[in-house]
Image 1 (cartoon, rainbow, N blue to C red):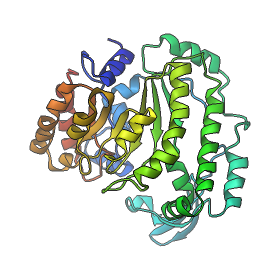
Image 2 (cartoon, helix red, strand yellow):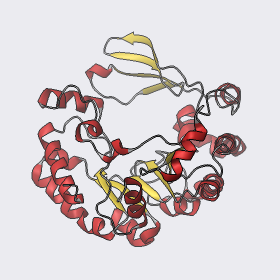
Image 3 (cartoon, rainbow, N blue to C red):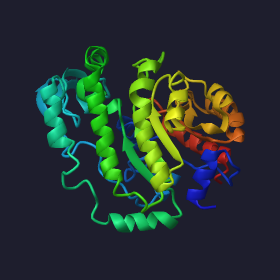
Image 4 (cartoon, helix red, strand yellow):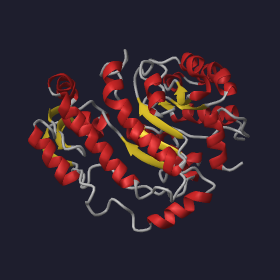
Length: 362
């Protein structure tokens, strides 16, 4: 069974020789710790060292749908143990020096604080005519997608998450109420830019999986109401998912969203997004999601990363907890977020051995 066949059959809930071996990854501080505890220095990622199925992808016919040019990440000021930086979304933030550990940034300014800010970014960085959005070898990539033995994925971007990063949670939340027309204008521009770029793929290639990023939920639920999500986002998602299904045969779309996603799952399904990732254990019940929606939804992740801290017995219990989900189909197990730096290398090696046994990759 090829990697492509294996992934598609798994997502459909059909029998497979084994499910794909994917991992989410680890924090940079985690890799630094593991280098001290035995991970060879020449490896800087889980995928490279363990040669997961993430290494068995080839090129896909992608086009650039985000900020172009992006904002330059740069240190603006050094303040003892802290630095002030401009990040890739154009926000100004203060944070702990990376070499001293991970920290949550304190945002001082966002890229979009006024309509003029938005109009400048729209015209200068979200212009579909900007050179560099279409690879020179796109026709060749499209042709390869038709008979590739690896899955063909396509980055579809974000509707809420990108705008939230450009405006901040508080400003976007207030704007939904004070100026909903502006929200619609920004989302429509993103959709129109995306579809303009995807027109270059229409009828030329086979896409298996569209991938999205939103991160729009906290521990109790979404950052906007399901009613707002249904009004503002579902119809716009559909414009893209239906286009890709019609023009490129795209059967699956996967959304990366942390937090409690239960209220949004049925709305994502309505919108054509049918793979939930990474499904954090602390906030979600994967069994309830599968009970409600059956084979219409697939899940990636859902292994509690906290078990890796506790070690062998806790890791074994996690795999026991997930066994019925694996047998039910439509599930690809891996940690429910990046592996944190308090996980010893020895514990992660044990997890990987058990994981490969669990999925039948021996």
